Length: 275
Image (cartoon, rainbow, N blue to C red):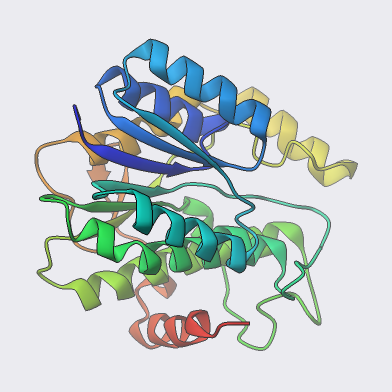
């Protein structure tokens, strides 16, 4: 990974931070995206100590499509190329909130940010010899159900169902993007990190929030274990399978719903709509 440029969203905590440190040890040049200035500074300093060639940070609220667009515009102006884009930032919330743009925040962060950032950074990815896009998904997608008239939980909402829906959306997006890229040198894939004792959902309160917290603490993997497959996909010599889904360093088969071509095309069209 020496001299390769890697962008990681959600890089200040959890598997994003663990992955950043692992890639720093390999000598990668890192662009770390997060929303907390103090955490961004801490992880950037640590990555430099670990051996990263160059570290840049970008404070961005990934629930805002406008801020994602601003970030991409800035990067396209300042960077020469991008070798790896790891769409990793994600959230699980037990309280429903909408963004200023009117999007439910789980949907905005876990799906729209992946879609928007990838589309906007294609010019930089095309300048790389071996560009790769990795999207953090989850086996939780198997519980996801797409209700086209309730994507933002307008009529009925549950935090866990909203999370599962976005993880299904990740796989539908990756599959459709892969079909559109076909034999392009740009490869896109999704990864399942497993149940990880990360910061995901730590802000939640109530019975559901505490139950998820203890589930992670009792059965969750370490952040380093959770980041392992994504780091492997970013750094291995062999390129990922176009539109593939990986877990535990192996390609795996997603659910039948995630392989629905009609649904992936419909999701793409809805995702293109700018608020």
